[in-house]
Length: 490
Image (cartoon, rainbow, N blue to C red; front, top):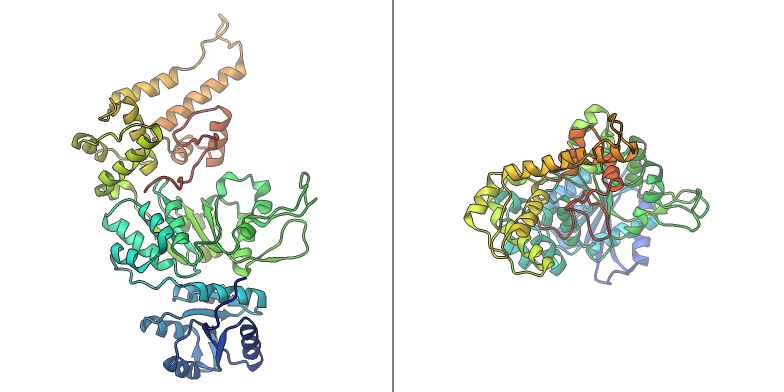
Protein backbone atom coordinates (compact mmCIF):
# COMPACT_ATOMS: atom_id res chain seq x y z
CA UNK A 1 0.00 0.00 0.00
CA UNK A 2 1.38 3.37 -0.99
CA UNK A 3 2.17 5.62 1.96
CA UNK A 4 0.50 9.03 2.01
CA UNK A 5 2.53 12.21 1.93
CA UNK A 6 3.50 13.85 5.18
CA UNK A 7 1.21 16.76 4.26
CA UNK A 8 -2.01 14.74 4.52
CA UNK A 9 -4.06 15.72 7.57
CA UNK A 10 -6.88 13.69 9.10
CA UNK A 11 -9.54 14.64 11.64
CA UNK A 12 -10.82 11.81 13.85
CA UNK A 13 -14.13 12.37 15.68
CA UNK A 14 -15.11 9.78 18.31
CA UNK A 15 -16.41 10.08 21.85
CA UNK A 16 -14.63 6.94 23.11
CA UNK A 17 -11.09 7.92 24.23
CA UNK A 18 -9.61 4.45 23.72
CA UNK A 19 -10.88 4.14 20.16
CA UNK A 20 -9.89 7.70 19.38
CA UNK A 21 -6.36 6.97 20.55
CA UNK A 22 -6.25 3.71 18.57
CA UNK A 23 -7.28 5.44 15.35
CA UNK A 24 -4.84 8.28 15.99
CA UNK A 25 -1.86 5.97 16.60
CA UNK A 26 -2.72 3.87 13.53
CA UNK A 27 -2.78 6.96 11.34
CA UNK A 28 0.37 8.45 12.84
CA UNK A 29 2.23 5.22 12.02
CA UNK A 30 1.08 5.63 8.40
CA UNK A 31 2.62 9.09 8.28
CA UNK A 32 -0.46 11.28 8.54
CA UNK A 33 -0.90 14.41 10.61
CA UNK A 34 -3.82 13.78 12.96
CA UNK A 35 -6.22 15.93 14.97
CA UNK A 36 -8.92 14.48 17.21
CA UNK A 37 -12.26 15.60 18.63
CA UNK A 38 -14.64 13.99 21.12
CA UNK A 39 -17.89 15.52 19.87
CA UNK A 40 -19.42 17.64 17.12
CA UNK A 41 -18.66 20.95 18.84
CA UNK A 42 -14.94 20.23 19.05
CA UNK A 43 -14.94 18.95 15.47
CA UNK A 44 -16.59 22.14 14.19
CA UNK A 45 -14.05 24.29 16.02
CA UNK A 46 -11.16 22.41 14.41
CA UNK A 47 -12.79 22.51 10.96
CA UNK A 48 -13.23 26.28 11.28
CA UNK A 49 -9.47 26.70 11.80
CA UNK A 50 -8.03 24.01 9.54
CA UNK A 51 -8.54 22.25 6.22
CA UNK A 52 -8.29 18.45 6.29
CA UNK A 53 -7.87 15.80 3.62
CA UNK A 54 -10.28 13.45 5.35
CA UNK A 55 -12.67 13.42 8.31
CA UNK A 56 -13.37 10.14 10.11
CA UNK A 57 -16.38 10.36 12.37
CA UNK A 58 -18.47 8.01 14.45
CA UNK A 59 -22.14 8.07 13.49
CA UNK A 60 -23.39 8.58 17.07
CA UNK A 61 -21.82 11.34 19.15
CA UNK A 62 -22.85 12.90 22.49
CA UNK A 63 -24.20 16.07 20.87
CA UNK A 64 -25.61 14.70 17.62
CA UNK A 65 -24.87 12.47 14.65
CA UNK A 66 -21.74 12.46 12.55
CA UNK A 67 -23.86 12.70 9.42
CA UNK A 68 -24.53 16.35 10.25
CA UNK A 69 -20.82 17.08 9.73
CA UNK A 70 -21.05 15.70 6.21
CA UNK A 71 -24.08 17.83 5.46
CA UNK A 72 -22.34 20.97 6.72
CA UNK A 73 -19.17 20.28 4.74
CA UNK A 74 -21.16 19.71 1.56
CA UNK A 75 -23.15 22.90 2.11
CA UNK A 76 -19.90 24.83 2.46
CA UNK A 77 -18.51 23.03 -0.63
CA UNK A 78 -15.48 21.85 1.32
CA UNK A 79 -13.18 19.24 -0.21
CA UNK A 80 -12.71 16.95 2.82
CA UNK A 81 -13.55 13.30 2.21
CA UNK A 82 -15.76 11.97 5.02
CA UNK A 83 -15.66 8.41 6.33
CA UNK A 84 -18.43 7.37 8.74
CA UNK A 85 -18.10 4.63 11.38
CA UNK A 86 -21.39 2.81 11.93
CA UNK A 87 -22.53 0.09 14.33
CA UNK A 88 -22.22 -3.51 13.19
CA UNK A 89 -25.17 -4.62 11.10
CA UNK A 90 -26.50 -1.08 10.68
CA UNK A 91 -26.76 -1.24 6.91
CA UNK A 92 -29.37 1.52 6.87
CA UNK A 93 -26.98 3.98 8.53
CA UNK A 94 -24.20 3.11 6.09
CA UNK A 95 -26.45 3.61 3.09
CA UNK A 96 -27.84 6.83 4.56
CA UNK A 97 -24.29 8.13 5.02
CA UNK A 98 -23.30 7.30 1.44
CA UNK A 99 -26.44 8.93 0.07
CA UNK A 100 -25.73 11.95 2.27
CA UNK A 101 -22.33 12.44 0.64
CA UNK A 102 -19.94 10.31 2.70
CA UNK A 103 -16.97 9.02 0.73
CA UNK A 104 -17.08 5.65 2.47
CA UNK A 105 -18.00 3.92 5.71
CA UNK A 106 -16.54 1.51 8.28
CA UNK A 107 -18.39 -0.97 10.46
CA UNK A 108 -17.67 -1.57 14.16
CA UNK A 109 -15.64 -3.33 15.36
CA UNK A 110 -13.26 -1.62 12.95
CA UNK A 111 -10.66 -3.83 11.30
CA UNK A 112 -7.42 -1.81 11.27
CA UNK A 113 -6.27 -3.20 7.93
CA UNK A 114 -9.56 -2.17 6.37
CA UNK A 115 -9.33 1.14 8.24
CA UNK A 116 -5.98 1.88 6.60
CA UNK A 117 -7.31 0.90 3.17
CA UNK A 118 -10.32 3.18 3.45
CA UNK A 119 -8.32 6.17 4.70
CA UNK A 120 -5.71 5.75 1.95
CA UNK A 121 -8.48 5.55 -0.61
CA UNK A 122 -10.12 8.70 0.75
CA UNK A 123 -6.88 10.68 0.77
CA UNK A 124 -6.00 9.47 -2.74
CA UNK A 125 -9.30 10.70 -4.07
CA UNK A 126 -8.19 13.94 -5.69
CA UNK A 127 -11.00 14.43 -8.22
CA UNK A 128 -12.76 17.67 -7.29
CA UNK A 129 -16.45 17.65 -6.49
CA UNK A 130 -18.14 19.31 -9.47
CA UNK A 131 -21.64 20.81 -9.57
CA UNK A 132 -24.04 18.60 -11.45
CA UNK A 133 -25.01 21.35 -13.88
CA UNK A 134 -21.48 22.14 -15.08
CA UNK A 135 -20.95 21.94 -18.80
CA UNK A 136 -18.88 19.09 -20.18
CA UNK A 137 -16.28 21.62 -21.30
CA UNK A 138 -15.80 22.54 -17.66
CA UNK A 139 -15.63 18.88 -16.73
CA UNK A 140 -12.88 18.37 -19.29
CA UNK A 141 -10.87 21.32 -17.98
CA UNK A 142 -11.37 20.16 -14.40
CA UNK A 143 -9.29 17.17 -15.32
CA UNK A 144 -10.98 13.84 -15.01
CA UNK A 145 -7.70 12.85 -16.63
CA UNK A 146 -6.99 11.59 -20.13
CA UNK A 147 -8.40 8.15 -19.36
CA UNK A 148 -11.54 9.57 -17.82
CA UNK A 149 -12.11 11.98 -20.67
CA UNK A 150 -11.71 9.24 -23.26
CA UNK A 151 -14.29 7.18 -21.38
CA UNK A 152 -16.70 10.13 -21.42
CA UNK A 153 -16.05 10.73 -25.12
CA UNK A 154 -17.25 7.19 -25.87
CA UNK A 155 -20.68 8.26 -24.64
CA UNK A 156 -21.71 9.83 -27.93
CA UNK A 157 -24.49 12.39 -27.88
CA UNK A 158 -25.31 15.90 -26.70
CA UNK A 159 -29.00 15.46 -25.90
CA UNK A 160 -30.12 16.77 -22.49
CA UNK A 161 -30.41 13.25 -21.06
CA UNK A 162 -26.90 12.33 -22.25
CA UNK A 163 -25.45 15.53 -20.81
CA UNK A 164 -27.13 14.70 -17.52
CA UNK A 165 -25.64 11.21 -17.57
CA UNK A 166 -22.13 12.57 -18.18
CA UNK A 167 -22.45 15.20 -15.46
CA UNK A 168 -23.71 12.58 -13.02
CA UNK A 169 -20.85 10.23 -13.87
CA UNK A 170 -18.27 12.83 -12.90
CA UNK A 171 -20.15 13.65 -9.72
CA UNK A 172 -20.66 10.10 -8.45
CA UNK A 173 -17.15 8.98 -9.43
CA UNK A 174 -15.70 10.84 -6.44
CA UNK A 175 -17.00 8.48 -3.75
CA UNK A 176 -17.12 4.78 -2.94
CA UNK A 177 -20.91 4.67 -3.00
CA UNK A 178 -22.30 1.72 -5.00
CA UNK A 179 -23.97 2.71 -8.29
CA UNK A 180 -26.80 0.86 -10.03
CA UNK A 181 -27.01 1.56 -13.77
CA UNK A 182 -30.34 0.67 -15.35
CA UNK A 183 -31.56 0.80 -18.91
CA UNK A 184 -32.79 -1.32 -21.78
CA UNK A 185 -30.51 -3.83 -23.45
CA UNK A 186 -28.12 -2.13 -25.85
CA UNK A 187 -28.17 1.34 -24.26
CA UNK A 188 -24.51 1.24 -23.17
CA UNK A 189 -24.67 0.46 -19.46
CA UNK A 190 -21.15 -1.00 -19.36
CA UNK A 191 -19.72 2.10 -21.04
CA UNK A 192 -21.35 4.25 -18.35
CA UNK A 193 -20.03 1.99 -15.60
CA UNK A 194 -16.51 2.11 -17.03
CA UNK A 195 -16.68 5.90 -17.27
CA UNK A 196 -17.45 6.01 -13.54
CA UNK A 197 -14.34 3.91 -12.88
CA UNK A 198 -12.15 5.91 -15.27
CA UNK A 199 -13.12 9.22 -13.66
CA UNK A 200 -12.53 8.03 -10.09
CA UNK A 201 -9.38 7.88 -8.00
CA UNK A 202 -9.39 4.14 -8.75
CA UNK A 203 -8.81 4.66 -12.48
CA UNK A 204 -5.30 3.17 -12.25
CA UNK A 205 -6.63 0.15 -10.37
CA UNK A 206 -8.19 -2.95 -11.92
CA UNK A 207 -11.45 -2.85 -13.84
CA UNK A 208 -13.16 -6.25 -13.56
CA UNK A 209 -16.38 -6.68 -15.55
CA UNK A 210 -18.56 -9.70 -14.81
CA UNK A 211 -21.66 -10.85 -16.68
CA UNK A 212 -23.63 -12.47 -13.85
CA UNK A 213 -25.99 -14.26 -16.24
CA UNK A 214 -23.14 -16.02 -18.06
CA UNK A 215 -21.75 -17.98 -15.08
CA UNK A 216 -23.15 -21.45 -14.32
CA UNK A 217 -24.86 -21.40 -10.94
CA UNK A 218 -22.62 -24.15 -9.54
CA UNK A 219 -19.52 -22.03 -10.18
CA UNK A 220 -20.77 -18.68 -8.91
CA UNK A 221 -19.23 -18.81 -5.43
CA UNK A 222 -15.80 -19.93 -6.67
CA UNK A 223 -15.82 -17.32 -9.45
CA UNK A 224 -16.79 -14.47 -7.10
CA UNK A 225 -14.77 -15.35 -4.00
CA UNK A 226 -12.00 -17.65 -5.26
CA UNK A 227 -11.08 -21.18 -4.22
CA UNK A 228 -8.22 -23.03 -2.58
CA UNK A 229 -6.46 -25.97 -4.18
CA UNK A 230 -8.54 -29.11 -3.71
CA UNK A 231 -11.69 -27.20 -2.72
CA UNK A 232 -13.60 -29.04 -5.45
CA UNK A 233 -12.92 -31.57 -8.17
CA UNK A 234 -10.57 -30.05 -10.71
CA UNK A 235 -9.23 -27.30 -8.41
CA UNK A 236 -5.52 -27.97 -9.03
CA UNK A 237 -4.30 -24.54 -7.88
CA UNK A 238 -5.41 -21.68 -5.67
CA UNK A 239 -7.44 -19.22 -7.71
CA UNK A 240 -8.55 -15.72 -6.93
CA UNK A 241 -12.12 -14.61 -7.40
CA UNK A 242 -13.56 -11.48 -8.94
CA UNK A 243 -13.45 -9.61 -5.62
CA UNK A 244 -9.74 -10.32 -5.10
CA UNK A 245 -8.94 -9.51 -8.74
CA UNK A 246 -10.69 -6.13 -8.45
CA UNK A 247 -8.98 -5.12 -5.19
CA UNK A 248 -7.98 -1.48 -5.39
CA UNK A 249 -10.26 -0.95 -8.36
CA UNK A 250 -13.86 -1.41 -9.51
CA UNK A 251 -15.98 -4.56 -9.77
CA UNK A 252 -18.71 -4.21 -12.40
CA UNK A 253 -21.57 -6.67 -11.99
CA UNK A 254 -23.55 -6.69 -15.22
CA UNK A 255 -27.01 -8.28 -15.35
CA UNK A 256 -27.09 -8.35 -11.55
CA UNK A 257 -30.81 -9.15 -11.69
CA UNK A 258 -30.03 -12.64 -13.01
CA UNK A 259 -28.16 -13.77 -9.88
CA UNK A 260 -29.88 -16.65 -8.02
CA UNK A 261 -31.26 -15.78 -4.58
CA UNK A 262 -28.73 -17.97 -2.75
CA UNK A 263 -25.84 -16.11 -4.35
CA UNK A 264 -27.52 -12.76 -3.69
CA UNK A 265 -27.28 -13.48 0.04
CA UNK A 266 -23.55 -14.23 -0.17
CA UNK A 267 -22.92 -11.18 -2.34
CA UNK A 268 -24.72 -8.95 0.17
CA UNK A 269 -22.48 -10.16 2.99
CA UNK A 270 -19.33 -9.59 0.91
CA UNK A 271 -20.39 -6.04 0.07
CA UNK A 272 -21.38 -5.15 3.64
CA UNK A 273 -18.40 -6.65 5.42
CA UNK A 274 -15.83 -6.23 2.63
CA UNK A 275 -14.53 -9.68 3.31
CA UNK A 276 -14.73 -12.84 1.26
CA UNK A 277 -13.88 -16.41 2.11
CA UNK A 278 -12.51 -18.50 -0.77
CA UNK A 279 -13.95 -21.98 -1.10
CA UNK A 280 -11.96 -24.41 1.01
CA UNK A 281 -10.37 -21.68 3.14
CA UNK A 282 -10.73 -21.02 6.86
CA UNK A 283 -9.53 -17.43 6.46
CA UNK A 284 -11.38 -14.40 5.16
CA UNK A 285 -9.72 -11.93 2.80
CA UNK A 286 -10.27 -8.19 3.24
CA UNK A 287 -11.18 -6.74 -0.15
CA UNK A 288 -11.08 -3.13 -1.26
CA UNK A 289 -13.43 -2.76 -4.22
CA UNK A 290 -16.03 -0.34 -5.44
CA UNK A 291 -19.21 -1.96 -6.70
CA UNK A 292 -20.98 -0.75 -9.84
CA UNK A 293 -23.82 -2.94 -11.09
CA UNK A 294 -26.21 -2.87 -14.03
CA UNK A 295 -29.43 -4.50 -15.16
CA UNK A 296 -32.08 -4.18 -17.85
CA UNK A 297 -34.68 -5.40 -15.35
CA UNK A 298 -36.84 -3.30 -13.02
CA UNK A 299 -35.28 -4.50 -9.78
CA UNK A 300 -37.92 -2.87 -7.60
CA UNK A 301 -40.52 -5.04 -9.36
CA UNK A 302 -38.25 -8.07 -9.01
CA UNK A 303 -38.13 -7.38 -5.26
CA UNK A 304 -41.93 -7.30 -5.11
CA UNK A 305 -42.08 -10.63 -6.95
CA UNK A 306 -39.61 -12.19 -4.54
CA UNK A 307 -36.97 -12.68 -7.24
CA UNK A 308 -34.47 -10.22 -5.79
CA UNK A 309 -33.49 -9.54 -2.19
CA UNK A 310 -34.73 -6.21 -0.90
CA UNK A 311 -31.69 -5.68 1.33
CA UNK A 312 -29.31 -6.27 -1.58
CA UNK A 313 -31.30 -3.90 -3.80
CA UNK A 314 -31.15 -1.28 -1.04
CA UNK A 315 -27.38 -1.76 -0.78
CA UNK A 316 -26.67 -1.65 -4.53
CA UNK A 317 -29.02 1.22 -5.33
CA UNK A 318 -27.29 3.86 -3.21
CA UNK A 319 -26.84 5.93 -6.37
CA UNK A 320 -29.05 5.15 -9.35
CA UNK A 321 -28.30 6.07 -12.94
CA UNK A 322 -30.92 5.55 -15.66
CA UNK A 323 -29.83 5.40 -19.32
CA UNK A 324 -32.49 6.55 -21.77
CA UNK A 325 -33.33 4.40 -24.83
CA UNK A 326 -32.52 5.72 -28.30
CA UNK A 327 -36.17 6.49 -29.07
CA UNK A 328 -36.06 9.13 -26.32
CA UNK A 329 -32.93 10.82 -27.66
CA UNK A 330 -33.21 10.69 -31.44
CA UNK A 331 -31.31 13.96 -31.71
CA UNK A 332 -28.18 11.93 -30.87
CA UNK A 333 -28.65 9.66 -33.90
CA UNK A 334 -26.61 11.70 -36.45
CA UNK A 335 -23.54 11.87 -34.19
CA UNK A 336 -23.98 8.29 -33.07
CA UNK A 337 -24.37 6.98 -36.62
CA UNK A 338 -21.27 8.84 -37.76
CA UNK A 339 -19.26 7.38 -34.89
CA UNK A 340 -20.47 3.85 -35.63
CA UNK A 341 -19.91 4.21 -39.37
CA UNK A 342 -16.36 5.45 -38.80
CA UNK A 343 -15.58 2.38 -36.71
CA UNK A 344 -17.29 -0.03 -39.12
CA UNK A 345 -15.36 1.48 -42.04
CA UNK A 346 -12.07 1.35 -40.14
CA UNK A 347 -12.56 -2.33 -39.32
CA UNK A 348 -13.52 -3.08 -42.95
CA UNK A 349 -10.61 -1.04 -44.37
CA UNK A 350 -12.86 1.20 -46.48
CA UNK A 351 -13.68 4.91 -46.63
CA UNK A 352 -16.40 6.06 -44.26
CA UNK A 353 -19.74 6.12 -46.15
CA UNK A 354 -21.85 9.24 -45.93
CA UNK A 355 -25.12 9.26 -44.01
CA UNK A 356 -27.70 11.00 -46.17
CA UNK A 357 -30.75 12.80 -44.85
CA UNK A 358 -33.15 10.19 -46.23
CA UNK A 359 -31.26 7.42 -44.45
CA UNK A 360 -31.37 9.33 -41.18
CA UNK A 361 -35.12 9.85 -41.54
CA UNK A 362 -35.46 6.11 -42.11
CA UNK A 363 -33.55 5.33 -38.91
CA UNK A 364 -35.47 7.87 -36.85
CA UNK A 365 -38.73 6.21 -37.88
CA UNK A 366 -37.65 2.80 -36.58
CA UNK A 367 -38.50 1.70 -33.00
CA UNK A 368 -34.89 0.55 -32.41
CA UNK A 369 -35.91 -1.65 -29.50
CA UNK A 370 -32.37 -3.06 -29.50
CA UNK A 371 -30.98 0.47 -29.11
CA UNK A 372 -27.31 1.00 -30.05
CA UNK A 373 -26.75 -2.71 -30.65
CA UNK A 374 -29.61 -2.84 -33.17
CA UNK A 375 -28.49 0.43 -34.78
CA UNK A 376 -24.97 -0.94 -35.23
CA UNK A 377 -26.39 -4.09 -36.85
CA UNK A 378 -28.50 -2.03 -39.27
CA UNK A 379 -25.49 0.09 -40.23
CA UNK A 380 -23.32 -3.00 -40.74
CA UNK A 381 -25.91 -4.33 -43.19
CA UNK A 382 -26.33 -0.96 -44.91
CA UNK A 383 -22.57 -0.69 -45.47
CA UNK A 384 -22.43 -4.23 -46.85
CA UNK A 385 -25.33 -3.58 -49.25
CA UNK A 386 -24.12 -0.11 -50.28
CA UNK A 387 -21.82 0.89 -53.11
CA UNK A 388 -18.90 1.98 -50.91
CA UNK A 389 -19.94 5.63 -50.82
CA UNK A 390 -23.58 5.55 -49.77
CA UNK A 391 -25.64 3.24 -47.58
CA UNK A 392 -28.35 0.86 -48.70
CA UNK A 393 -30.91 -0.07 -46.04
CA UNK A 394 -33.04 -3.18 -46.36
CA UNK A 395 -36.73 -2.55 -46.88
CA UNK A 396 -39.25 -4.11 -44.50
CA UNK A 397 -40.20 -6.46 -47.34
CA UNK A 398 -36.67 -7.76 -47.81
CA UNK A 399 -36.27 -8.25 -44.07
CA UNK A 400 -39.50 -10.26 -44.03
CA UNK A 401 -38.11 -12.30 -46.87
CA UNK A 402 -34.97 -13.01 -44.85
CA UNK A 403 -37.12 -14.23 -41.97
CA UNK A 404 -39.18 -16.38 -44.35
CA UNK A 405 -36.03 -17.91 -45.76
CA UNK A 406 -34.89 -18.70 -42.24
CA UNK A 407 -38.20 -20.37 -41.45
CA UNK A 408 -38.02 -22.36 -44.69
CA UNK A 409 -34.59 -23.72 -43.86
CA UNK A 410 -35.98 -27.00 -42.52
CA UNK A 411 -34.83 -30.20 -44.24
CA UNK A 412 -37.43 -32.11 -46.16
CA UNK A 413 -38.41 -35.46 -44.69
CA UNK A 414 -35.99 -38.16 -45.69
CA UNK A 415 -38.60 -40.87 -46.11
CA UNK A 416 -41.74 -41.04 -48.24
CA UNK A 417 -43.94 -41.52 -45.16
CA UNK A 418 -42.98 -38.05 -43.83
CA UNK A 419 -40.72 -39.33 -41.06
CA UNK A 420 -37.28 -37.61 -40.97
CA UNK A 421 -34.31 -39.81 -41.66
CA UNK A 422 -32.23 -37.93 -39.04
CA UNK A 423 -34.48 -36.79 -36.22
CA UNK A 424 -31.75 -35.01 -34.24
CA UNK A 425 -30.66 -32.98 -37.27
CA UNK A 426 -34.27 -32.25 -38.21
CA UNK A 427 -35.03 -30.90 -34.73
CA UNK A 428 -31.81 -28.89 -34.62
CA UNK A 429 -32.65 -27.24 -37.94
CA UNK A 430 -36.18 -26.52 -36.76
CA UNK A 431 -34.91 -24.98 -33.52
CA UNK A 432 -32.28 -22.96 -35.41
CA UNK A 433 -34.96 -21.63 -37.73
CA UNK A 434 -37.19 -20.50 -34.86
CA UNK A 435 -34.30 -18.85 -33.02
CA UNK A 436 -33.19 -17.01 -36.17
CA UNK A 437 -36.69 -15.70 -36.73
CA UNK A 438 -36.92 -14.47 -33.13
CA UNK A 439 -33.49 -12.81 -33.36
CA UNK A 440 -34.35 -11.06 -36.63
CA UNK A 441 -37.67 -9.90 -35.21
CA UNK A 442 -35.97 -8.31 -32.19
CA UNK A 443 -33.03 -6.75 -34.02
CA UNK A 444 -30.69 -9.42 -32.63
CA UNK A 445 -31.55 -8.42 -29.07
CA UNK A 446 -30.95 -11.76 -27.34
CA UNK A 447 -32.73 -10.70 -24.15
CA UNK A 448 -35.89 -9.72 -26.03
CA UNK A 449 -35.72 -12.83 -28.21
CA UNK A 450 -35.38 -15.06 -25.15
CA UNK A 451 -38.38 -13.40 -23.49
CA UNK A 452 -40.44 -13.82 -26.65
CA UNK A 453 -39.63 -17.55 -26.74
CA UNK A 454 -40.19 -18.10 -23.01
CA UNK A 455 -36.50 -18.83 -22.37
CA UNK A 456 -34.04 -17.44 -19.88
CA UNK A 457 -31.11 -15.44 -21.23
CA UNK A 458 -28.77 -18.25 -20.19
CA UNK A 459 -30.85 -20.81 -22.11
CA UNK A 460 -30.89 -18.54 -25.16
CA UNK A 461 -27.13 -18.11 -25.09
CA UNK A 462 -26.60 -21.85 -24.79
CA UNK A 463 -28.80 -22.58 -27.80
CA UNK A 464 -27.12 -19.92 -29.95
CA UNK A 465 -23.73 -21.41 -29.18
CA UNK A 466 -24.83 -25.04 -29.61
CA UNK A 467 -26.49 -24.40 -32.97
CA UNK A 468 -23.64 -22.16 -34.21
CA UNK A 469 -25.92 -19.24 -35.03
CA UNK A 470 -23.98 -16.21 -36.26
CA UNK A 471 -24.94 -12.95 -34.55
CA UNK A 472 -23.65 -9.38 -35.03
CA UNK A 473 -22.19 -9.37 -31.50
CA UNK A 474 -19.98 -12.42 -31.85
CA UNK A 475 -16.31 -11.52 -31.60
CA UNK A 476 -13.40 -13.15 -33.36
CA UNK A 477 -13.00 -15.72 -30.58
CA UNK A 478 -16.61 -16.83 -30.88
CA UNK A 479 -17.55 -15.46 -27.47
CA UNK A 480 -21.07 -14.08 -27.22
CA UNK A 481 -21.57 -10.67 -25.64
CA UNK A 482 -24.89 -9.76 -24.07
CA UNK A 483 -23.42 -6.76 -22.30
CA UNK A 484 -22.25 -3.77 -24.32
CA UNK A 485 -18.78 -3.97 -25.77
CA UNK A 486 -16.44 -1.41 -24.28
CA UNK A 487 -15.53 -0.46 -27.83
CA UNK A 488 -19.07 0.42 -28.82
CA UNK A 489 -19.95 4.14 -28.63
CA UNK A 490 -23.18 5.06 -26.92
